[in-house]
Image (tube, rainbow, N blue to C red; front, side, top):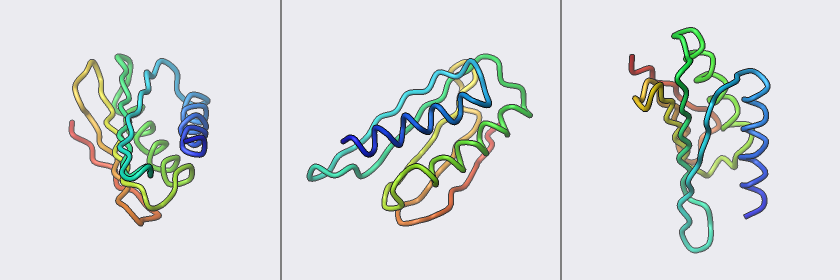
Length: 102
């Protein structure tokens, strides 16, 4: 749907203002023609620990600001295809949690 596409597009543009060389993809699960869950995958080969923390925080803020609060959203941040951080916004929440896996 157009609203969620616009939210994702805005999120990507906002993140790319601050960080280069990220490859961002998303997948959504629709139930009864309504978006229920979004999983975003972020890949990079150039993130230091400081940049990883910054990117995690940016996604944490952006998913809360851009998407409807009734969605479950997970962001997997990977360095060289290995998950190093996870950002989770639970359904019906206006905040998200960042988990560093390094």
